[in-house]
Amino acid sequence: MRRRGERGGGDGDRDADGDSGPAEGTAGAARRGRGWLAWCPRLRTLLLDLLLIYIAVPFLIRLFPSLLTKFVFLNFLAFPFFVDLRRPELLLNNTISLYLVTEPDVTVGIWHTVPGSRGAEAWGKDQRWYEEALSDSHPVIIYLHGNGGTRAARHRIQFLKTMGAADFHILALDYRGYGDSSGDPTESGFTMDVLALYDWAKARSGNSSILLWGHSLGTGIATNAARKLQEERGVQVDAVVLEAPYTNIREAAAHIPITTIYRQFPGFGYLILDSLALGNMFFRSDENVKVLACPLLILHAEDDDVVPPHLGRKLFETARSAYKDKSKVKFITFPKKLGLGHDYISFNPELPILVKDFLNIK
Image (cartoon, rainbow, N blue to C red; front, side):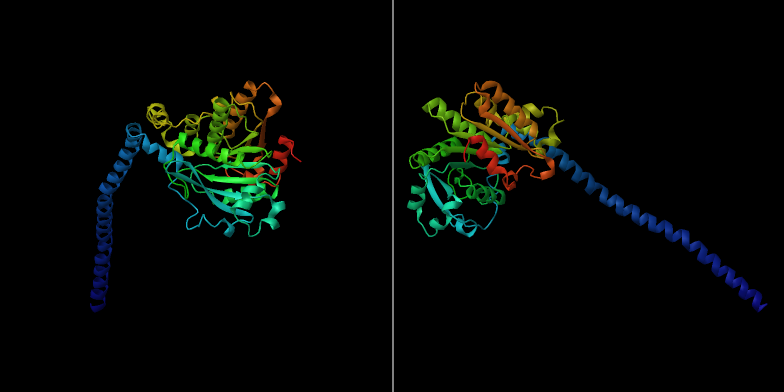
């Protein structure tokens, strides 16, 4: 009897254990369900907030086009941080920092790198020596960088190294509002800064040729300045080099990666692209090159994922059709396998040779 009862008790225990499994499973599922339901309102709120922000941004840009200048110029991103722009010798050889007043209350910072062949001679020299060196017959590049950062950015440092070693003088400018330069960034203000630097260099360079070299955003600044010199003063710069250029800022904005999420947005053209003009931003290189007559070299990497290379080619075709002397316009592309992208054409060791060949400089 005892054994039978024990066996019965054992069966009862198993029945009790068996019944507890589904009960605990149901309770666990309920708890998980309550946890998910608790997160649902938060997730819905987050997604709704993101949707409202996405919808609101184009309308805010249209109402306040000055907001768009922040995204175009990116001058508030003063990278690399913690660099003393007054001491370029910490980053470069044969280089000094100088400052130029381009209009009342606006002073811009500039680095002057002398040709590598004069490196030993330049050691320890002051600004006066550097200024006098500009007339040594070596060509002078006025380098106009793209948006964001300062003249100390890594790819800009590399440009000074590469072209300095190839015996060019380089005057690398931080426009108003960038780096340690005063003032607020505007398209017309950038042109004034470049013209003031051109005049300063021309007064000191003797018979040395002066080139305007623009990169990215700086290509529009370069063509603006070259056109203004030609139309208003009858002065033709010795050459213009455009690295990773665009046709105009509206068309560039329609293709850059940051606008991808808005290209299918109803009213994208009116709310965002047309607002560039309301913010007085045009950078019409496609119109400028129709006026120019100086040698024009366009450089573009095939793997440029910021400014598509087809914009560079389109600009070249516009210039070539407008120039009477077609030999003065050249377009050079760099294959994807080199991995130069948007910023690193200056890392190509063949760059100085390509430029010198085009300009007939030995």
